[in-house]
Length: 94
Image 1: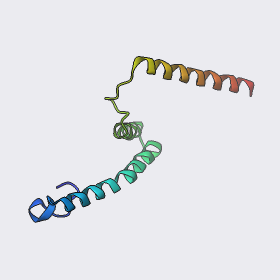
Image 2: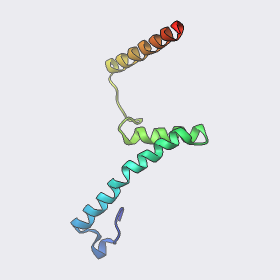
Image 3: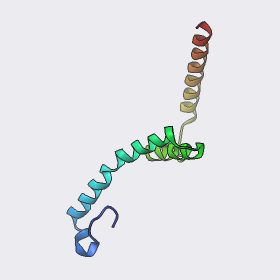
Image 4: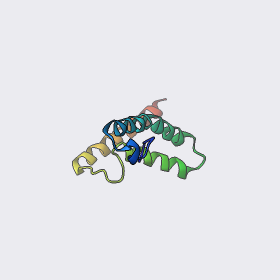
């Protein structure tokens, strides 16, 4: 059984064993995300960096299946364009 230290026949299906397994698995989430974040920065190939980034996005609800409303997307794009224009203006003044 996933996260268990005993099989279901020897107590793995008991509520306390299931709860302990869930706690053990949850304790691994933050270190796993931190490790993926390191891979985003330090992986040898662009493919590995991209895969790590995709895994983080999938696990945080921003993966391929995320639905974005058109109005929301228009707003995000216009905000990004404003940021780029502002940065270009600042670079031109420097």
